Length: 513
Image (cartoon, rainbow, N blue to C red; front, top):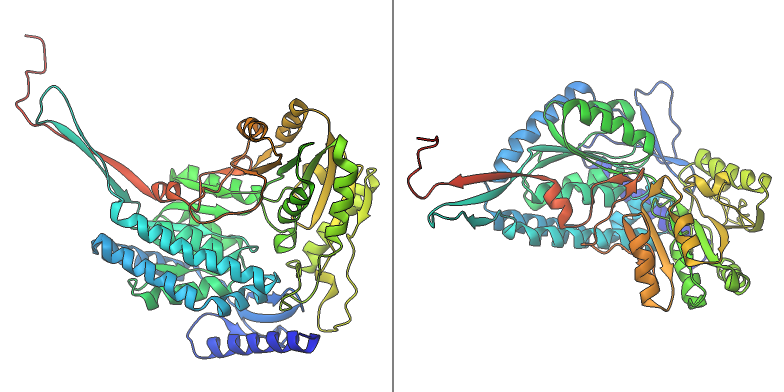
């Protein structure tokens, strides 16, 4: 495919977006190729990161509208909970079927919204379809327990798993559809209704998911979407009808949500930032370790919270590993995300690109060496916006106290560090305020399990990285948050446990005689 073909793919995707919005009553106004008119009464505009052309305009959801949505969601939840378990499972499975049938189009929307390569967006959507299968399968057996209470053989207690009612979720911009699915599907599977707020930068696929829930037969208003920024997000978390909240975003945002939840005494799940370590032991297969390093740093242009930008390499293999890594990184093609050969697309915005670039400059000023990349690519195709792109970066001569090593960059930047002993690397890996993920490459499984047991983080990869099939719990330690998504643990967290005791005999006199 040549550049004209990629542009044609993008053009067709935008035309499909226009047709979809033009034939709906959704709160999004098509804006591609347009500029925001100051006289227009819209609060937000979302842009295609690759071209920085506007996609849609929209207004922030009003507080009165949020009230209506919450009331309607509670009504829908009562209808939903009255359905037989198998019926609920069938409906959620049907949503998954609809997602799978629309994989190509949903991936196009995700690529337009985020700038990530189309092939990567497609993989995200396919995994989300699997999530519906997973949680639909849990529903028929999502019941309590029964236990006898001696000495009376007729006495027993049983438990019930009951929904909270209305739950809320707030997502980030790097995986918009995945976050809408990961938060809403387990909530609905547990019998709740759900209101989701996507990032104001990426509203498209969460809105389409709203339509798919309806098409599959969910009660009207069971899943709804609010649009806007921090203000409406705070109003959502503080709404008196919301009984649980799940948040993905920054540590500062998580603290704000947690304060609101604490004030109202409602449970919350927080998935926040990360600064994960990837450990390359002396006996590692270097080719596999290099592939793992790429997986740990360059998906979604490095904008992944679980990324392992701190790559610790045993000193004895540092030179050959670094050489192989450079050779592999040089093969990464940065460009139009509609190009099937492109590995990395655009960062989410010019401001974020500048933030990543500032981290690289900071590292160099502190003594790091820019080994490769970290620059704006030079495109022959004029329709791409260079200010949103950056080439994959490798920094060496780094040390643990550098800003670039301690703080989350959220971009395609590897910091190479060396170590000598296992005890040393465990200590240095854990010397972080974050604890989302970690990885180790070694051919000695005893070593791998020993290190995994000592790392202070929620997910550990042995000879792999950043693989999250449905069913694997995802969440962090320390400032990376608490609670888990993507697993049966998530389902449990969206329910309340009720214990019921049944006396099967006559009661004894309760006091001394």
